[in-house]
Image (tube, rainbow over the protein chains, first blue to last red):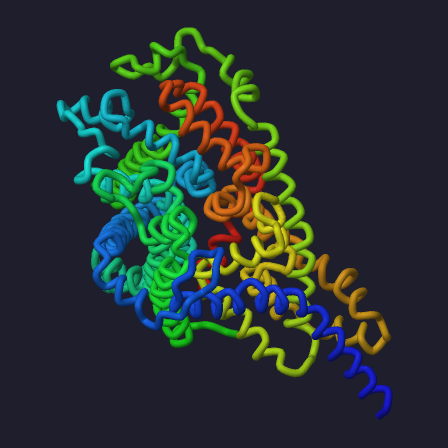
Amino acid sequence: MKTKSNLYRKEKLYGLLYVSPPVLGFLLFTLFPVAYSFYGSFTDWDGLGQMDFIGLSNFKDLLTDDLFHKASFNTIYMMIGIPIGIVLALLLALGLNRGIPGTTTFRVIYYVPVISSLAAISIMWSWAFNGDYGLVNQFLELFGIEGPNWLMNKHTVKPALIMMTVWKGLGYTMLLYLAALQSVPRSYYEAAELDGANGFAAFRHITWPMVKPVTFFIVVTNIIGGSQIFTEINIMTSTGGPEYSSASVVFYIWQKAFSNLQMGYASAMAVVLGIFIFIVTLIQFKMNEKSSFDI
Amino acid sequence: MSHSTRIKLTNTIIFIVLAIGAIFMIAPLLWMLSTSIKQKMDVFALPPVWIPSNPQWGKYLEIWEAGPLLSGIKNSVIIAVSVTVVGTFTSSLAAFSFAKLRFPGKNQIFLMLLSAMMIPYPAVMIPQFMMFSKVGWIDTLLPLIVPGLFGNIIMIFFLRQYLISIPNEVIEAAKIDGSSYFRLFSVITFPLIKPAVAAQLILWFMGIWNDYLAPIIYLNSPEKMTLQLVIANFNATYAIQTDYPLIMAASVIALLPVLTIFLVFQKQIIESVAISGVKG
């Protein structure tokens, strides 16, 4: 079978050739940088001169760095938007799943913020949050409420950002739920109805368990995305907000690395962030293995 | 109340709730558009003016002079087009290879690539910056283009899944006939996966177009900036002069291209997003 082995040899060659660009890209732009980041985190490094190995010093400093604590706290705080978004999106998806007229139009309208440029959206919202003339406060005025100067106040800047991120992400979550709801067999509900189950019971025992994998996917991807929040912060509160109350971890990394040129210290933070996200992603993969994942 | 009237009533209520929600979703964007055509005093009018009595389209002419908007668009197009065209080619070729060809270590290599999805950009941005500064690419578009040319793992993953569901017989038969592997890809496989490729390409394009973190790290000079950086600078500069119509006009321009793409391809985009989410 000389020809056949010849054929296979060729296939082997081309197979490897065709996957070589992404493999090369992976080595060059992921694996090597990750290793470098890791090494850099143990050094005193200004990005220009040499890297002096200082062991765990950077990580020790992180433990007592107030700004890092603030940035971490802010980042986690702003994830309050995740459960809010999930509840709203699921309600919307349930509504849209009833086949009412205008479903496509609603889907498009709710999805528009998702595809919009975050920079433009951030600019628009910073104007909307303006204390005197902003859209948000003018709306509140209808109810006789005098709104704060949202982005200038350390107590309201995070809620303002949460409001905006929920608005931005709602359409995406809704879409995922809608797709999941449409894959629930109708016969389940018919059977439940025959058994005399009311709407809420059907939701609790059929809908919720069926959309659980999607909920999990949304929670995980939102945590990963939320832990990397940057653009909104950079544009809406360019100094990190009053008393650094809106700075996120990535914002702080960016400041340390590219404004203060503390590359080693910034790398240490990047490593911490990377490990956090790695763990969250790993949980996601593990859970997927249990449900239905085919590699 | 009979069963069907109750359903009708519920549906009407839900329709109203959804419509109110839709107003909240779209109102900020309409306000942005409306602000962009307002006169300065209308901007600060209380209660708000939604439809200016005397719309001023002048800001849409002024913005081209007020900053490097045109070069911003040009730079964004250069980056997004070159990356998506070349990157889609390398990605779909790799997906074809992973799904339909036999070579040693295939699954291990694929898993290795997959692990890249776990690495967030902020974790690699510092070494990447140092690498590109070593080769003198800072303040050029190259750091934003070159990594993308090697392909996109999410796209490879998605297309591979898609290809696996396509039966092998045709491909096996063509192999026996001695068709070249590239022909196998370009003539037989690629046409089959075109819709999936298109959807992924659009999503990728929008992602690059809207990117902010990578460009802000690499680009300093105004004429090198992408559109997103240009409008962010507009915001920083003209907010002090409270020229909100100008800022909003520039932001509208930044939204228009992706908004147009979305409205044209919304069916494919929404489907593609829904599939990738449900499959996890």
